[in-house]
Length: 617
View (cartoon, rainbow, N blue to C red):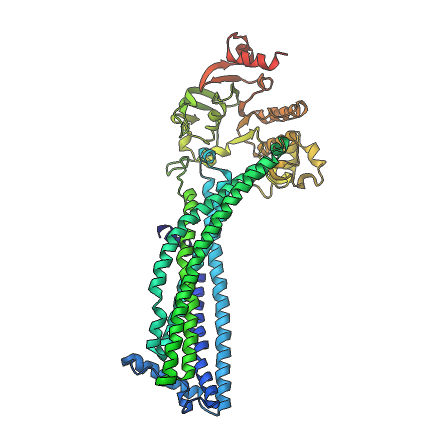
């Protein structure tokens, strides 16, 4: 229940709406009982007119059972007498008109308050779901890059979409079922007791048996529900991978292979859903059967009281049956509450796993503001290894990058180039050593301030399914048009943008799929130019482009690098010949450091080997 109480914590901001919903729920239950209770005088009046054994109109309303005593008896008798005086004055037609009018009013009020209760509870439910989803999504942005390397994208999407929806039912389970249904039960049990306490005992005899069975079912259901959410996450992951990799799937003719994989996941989900449905639904028929069994006994025993003992009237007995059978639906509904809570708790556990993941890269109370980069970036004895590894990716790196310099990083695959550069914006933190910005450890600088100083252009261009304008002015709604166009021109992007169907207002598709690779890269450069950061990071920004696109992109990059401190990761060595320094990495260590000509002159150097491999033709 710890998880469930944590879910309820999200209800606090909506206490006003919840209060209104609870009040409406109480009024609904009372009017629901009144609508049934009014059937006693109605039925007794009709039976009297038909000659059924009722001696006087005063017997139309039930007296409290003589076995009851004390203040309860006096209180109920006072209410009964007042009710008689109000309703049973006048002719039989007038009495019937009053009773029917009251029944109509009771049903009207019941439905009005039922509607209001449902609306305000829905407001609370949807508010809780929104807040929970927003918190999980917001927390995702605080988690380090290493977290996303270890988690499946589809799994994360499933938690924030499917799992959150499952949690929704748990809110109504408490504030609707746990309030309305018990109130309804109390009201109708009160009506039943006022008619015959002996008959009432039969109706509640079944509850202990039901609760034992239902509690066991709920525990089994929680475990199965958790497995169900995991299977849905697997389906989402498979779907996400297939859609994002559709080009490769088609190129290799793997449609049937992917179909089999997806069908396998959906079949597992299908089997699990059936199992959960079987478990979930078994509690309801069990409860109903036990209730009907008691109902049959009530009918038999009650008929004896009417026909043989004559201690209650036929109208009272019919109303008693109505009251008892009105109790059965809320009892059945309550029997599912535990199941719903268990299902919601299982789903919430998966959501809270995200929220409870402590970001290892975060601001502290002592973090400082930093807005102006002046001197240098320094790596002091920096080493790094991933959490699930014992092998160093970077080994004792010492390096100074002065303001305004262009420093390129080259080396074979897995040499540690990207990891080294990713530490500057704190996508990762060193396992040992530190990185200084103007002699200040970047761990002490507010992360938002640190990253505002940097623009990043990567090989895998990240664009959004929005307009060209929105992608260039990412994060700004009202950026001046002329500055967006100026950035696009500097990135060699303006000419192709104005040829698009709607120019700068053209939607470019998910990940910019409506554009070529070179066009996407120039949009991302325009985005970096508009940000105008003092530090630029290029991660193999031209390695995937054709020669014509590379020329245009390289021109844009050179404009972007002007008067900026630039860190470049490059596979194409032709793009870094004019760098102030070239750092050659091998197995996480710096093995060469210098300009292009110097490194090329070292016969046994790694840089020369890489260069000759690229230009040996």
